[in-house]
Length: 250
Image 1 (tube, helix red, strand yellow):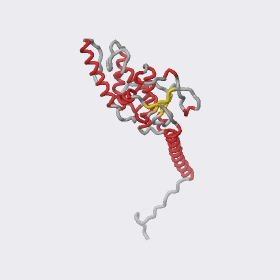
Image 2: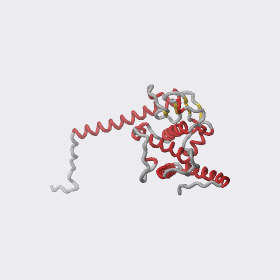
Image 3: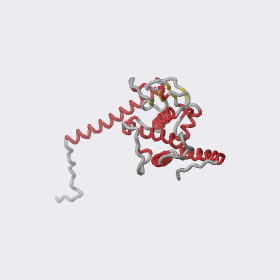
Image 4: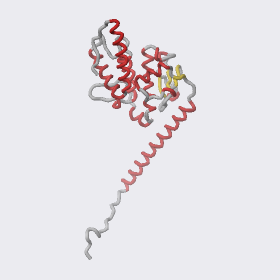
């Protein structure tokens, strides 16, 4: 009897024992990581909804500050400020301010220099801290899981805006620093009108223009706010006949 290619029985190759063990360990590791993340997320959810009580709702001005950048991407109605209270999940470790890991609503302002009754009318430093922490609220409200938090965490708050970088290229603390700096140097600067840099150094002009691109490409409402503030300043400029020397062409 002649066996044709179609009638030959294929004999499955045996996987080596080592490969089988590797696959079993890999599956167990993946399932374990998923289970740990689910349990951790559940614990944070329970703490967020039941264990952490009190806090102060955002004022109308604070709500507007958040919407001026993030638009409707943050549910400000559920956010609570805890001024003068340490972050619960740091086990007594001191920090200026924090959002509890995984929390989509609770901000703790521990250090005295971060305290304010209303951050919309506060000094520059506590206002920047407020927007920094609100960026973490945005991250958690927009599906940043604990796994992603640790994956994208980094030890530095510094960032480099050179090249064709995008907002999503940065880790969680860098993103928060970028938003605070955008407000500080572009929307509500101390020494020149919004979006303009009268007397500013070339380095600051370049940095501010980069902030505008990175932030506004991600958050279109920030661009609308800047344009509105610039238009309001144009009206005031016509009244005072004052000339500003630099305006970003974006």
